[in-house]
Image 1 (cartoon, helix red, strand yellow):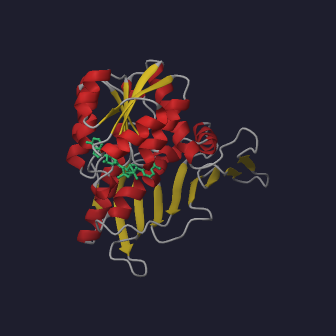
Image 2 (cartoon, rainbow, N blue to C red):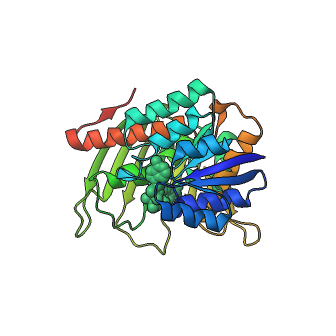
Image 3 (tube, rainbow, N blue to C red):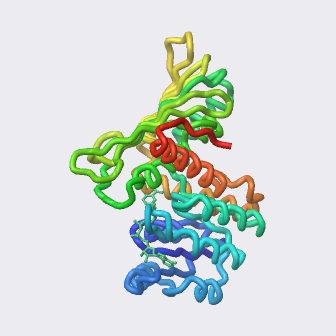
Length: 330
Ligand SMILES: NC(=O)c1ccc[n+]([C@@H]2O[C@H](COP(=O)([O-])OP(=O)(O)OC[C@H]3O[C@@H](n4cnc5c(N)ncnc54)[C@H](O)[C@@H]3O)[C@@H](O)[C@H]2O)c1
């Protein structure tokens, strides 16, 4: 049984708290927000003590796991401090995406977790679906053959006008993570951006990617399209087959090369995923299960290192826009 605290009680932290509360391997023991009203409201909702300062909570409760669901500038500037505090106190940490809005802080977070031999996961929830698992099995079983290309896209309405790079840094940790999950590390990035009607920030982006294993790929994203219809698509192709995942969990289809019969995973009506919240449920439950089983930290699915790698790709995309050139990663 893992004793868990949640830090940052906005909509997302409340969702984390609810899902730990429902997890039989976890006991939610405390919540913390520097905003007293938010901390008190969550404490009342889950019948746990409220704290307004992370260090005080860590000293009082000594949890096994902390979820960091703070946000901040570019949805990531407030993740660093509570993550470092929680790791320093010996807690395993599941942090929201983006791992941080700055690469140097993200590197420190990953380094401290490694130094302390603690599990550090990022909420890269889009890869935690049965459809994505089916697709990964097809890939690992060699049903795609030699990997050739990947096409990924994601679009959603987000009216926030903040940093010019908000869309790239806050939306694309998910898409880049899914692409890396299937195709490995990225070697080079080129990116174009555009602004939707009435927007002041770069709300659309088109990435051209080359992976270290030679795979080539494209990624399209937007913060300008209303919800209510499919919002994510991932296609990965090799010389023996190709799969397409529609909308994270709805459907995954394998098209074997030279075969007119395709194989389809469809989200079942009974026992299937119900809505977007279930991507959080699957991700959080996986982290709790891994920690509870005593997994070695470098085996964490959707790790801090994965979150950092995705953010480096996104920073390279920003550098590409600013310098109008291809950026090569280490
Ligand atoms: N994984 C996903 O699919 C997904 C979806 C949406 C948002 N998110 C992420 O979730 C995070 C939170 O989103 P939100 O909309 O709930 O944000 P929010 O700004 O509404 O809430 C964040 C809370 O953290 C608190 N906070 C900040 N620093 C703190 C500190 N040091 N100690 C304690 N509390 C602190 C703030 O007071 C605030 O109440 C963001 O990073 C966002 O990128 C993830």
